[in-house]
Length: 414
Image (cartoon, rainbow, N blue to C red; front, side, top):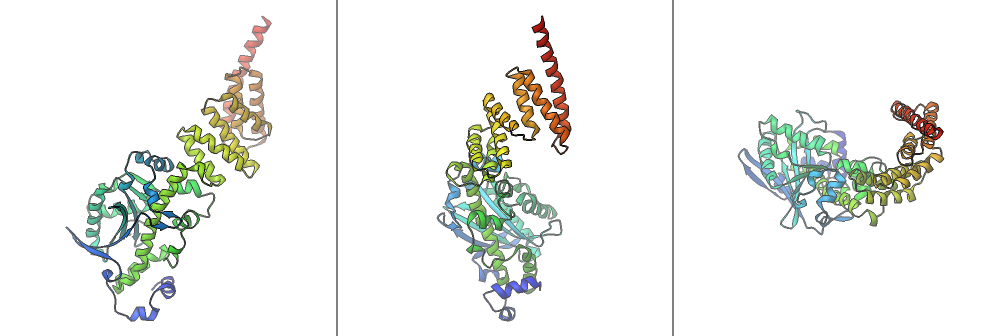
């Protein structure tokens, strides 16, 4: 038995370790609520659990998910496919496997699904108690997927769904039911929280963002789950699987509240506390979606909350670009000129002032001055991002400005 697994059993098992080893093995239906489901390939055990919408998981009730809009979810996840879908037709998925590296040698022994039905959140966990039950498990999962419009997971795009797809193909079964629109919460979580957290593991998100503590007390570490499953195959004592099933349930319920948290954050950003990094992340989302009024509100908030000179300069630069997109060209140029007067080495600032002076104010001398300042900075500093591009762009711009300025001088002399 794996040493860490043995230590875990000693610490958290309801039974004394020696008593646990010597007692009569128990079947899965004796330790969790569930039923056996008949399929064309035999029976598969399905563990079940239900949660009412008022149930709190950490700081957030499950019903908060039902109050979100597809538009908010699509915006925060950058997935326009979700825009017109019914959030009540989502299936939350989390799998447990015989290994964490993936590949054809890794099997899925537990498929946990959570969905909203009959005014409650229902959990169904399809458990493969031996490898000869794989076809039955895959068949049962395929059948229930017909009821859903999209998938929600955490790192499911890279792990759970490709691994499940591989198992279907190995067993010569179609995996088309897995080709639903997919919301992978790992990506918006990283985008929004990565600069404020040590990492973006789901457990970290739960503690720092969702306020989940008690549910994870005594929880099994993911790395031990394959060892637990192989120990179950050897002993046929399902008691050891109870911790795995509970771990899977917590992951699934966390996906519901995390989806609600992410959606409500972008919907109610004006009314909630946000870190400086989160404000900037939301600004980028609205900017890319061309919702510039929202982007302006956020970037002004970021400017007020900036802790360092570098953060302040970056926020002001963003503000300049937002103003330009809003066609407030003079205000935008004023921001860029203020930044340039502070000696910032970001070449795009000087380029933007030169563009404004050349095309809007027709002040070629001032445009030339800013171009030359940009060239001097690039001559003195070699680490400038996209340095070669800017050197070529500024030189080309200067040659055009000199021609325009010369024509004006000739007209004046004439």
